[in-house]
Image (tube, rainbow, N blue to C red; front, top):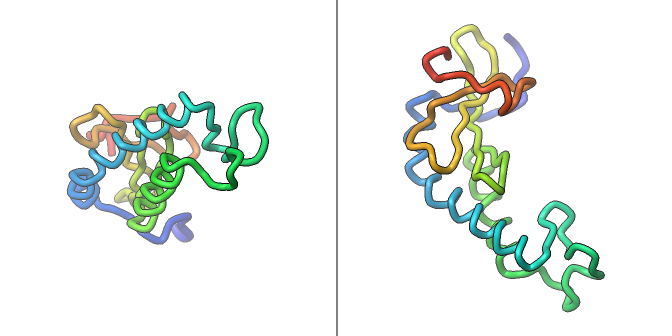
Length: 131
């Protein structure tokens, strides 16, 4: 197909092998996000809702530091974090027809059961047997 967005692509087997380690860290991401929400911390703008500074002492909450560390670690491995609230991750994949798509997994799912095109996103998830 030509040019791809991502340099790292996973076969379904490789993504499933990675998933073993992703289960725990993705669940941790959702826990950290909930903890930061309870504190009134906006993870997307890196500040407290309605507050000044990051948090008054010039540093991020420990939960934010840990969340950033986990996301960076996954991204270094080529795994994309797409949703912090629900633990949504995508694995870039090349279909047999050369199309770049995402193998899609969500905390609570036992296996990679879905995939979607990049433009369609999560809303366009299809069963893995249609890959």
